[in-house]
Length: 247
Ligand SMILES: [Fe+2]
Ligand SMILES: [Fe+2]
Image 1 (cartoon, rainbow, N blue to C red):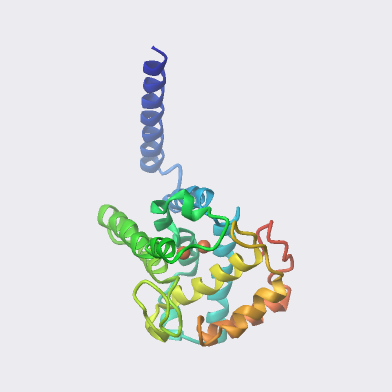
Image 2 (cartoon, rainbow, N blue to C red):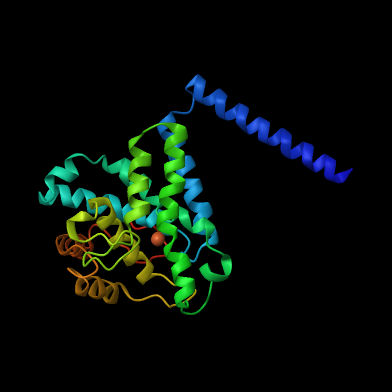
């Protein structure tokens, strides 16, 4: 009896939500842009909640990606690529970079120690899987910039400038600009926050690590831009990573 009541409550709630969604979309009461934002943000937060990322990671990375893309534009580098990127949409899309982690078991994602080679292989699969998940969304929703950016970022954010990354082993400028930007933002935030397998590094140590990895892990031009904006101080006045930095 209780189970039947719970089931019908869930059914009612689901129908009610769908009705609300349709009503607002068709009435235009909730602009689609805002709705997309909310859906992407919520989806990203759900994934973040069960992964090893610290709370607020996807929100901070979004801010970093946006700031980096604006700085690239201001610096006049990679002009052809940046001219074709809608920065706000790309920053929003960056929140889905680890969507493929949904398929990685908790025991691996939350392991408070270094992963074995076999476990790491399973984690590495999240980039290809993320691409597949977002590819499925594109098939259903039709082509749109936001999802195209999300797919590129999900697939390429663990590629390395020297070709030693995954999952395609792309090298240098073969890696799409959004993947190169995401790599820096993602690693910086991972370094300065606590994870199950490591303590948080200081901001200075994190910057040092990223600087040393320019031309190896990261695009050296982007590392210079990252260092310029993050050390300027006025962009990120608050390095307390418990809070979202202000651009
Ligand atoms: Fe990732
Ligand atoms: Fe991440």
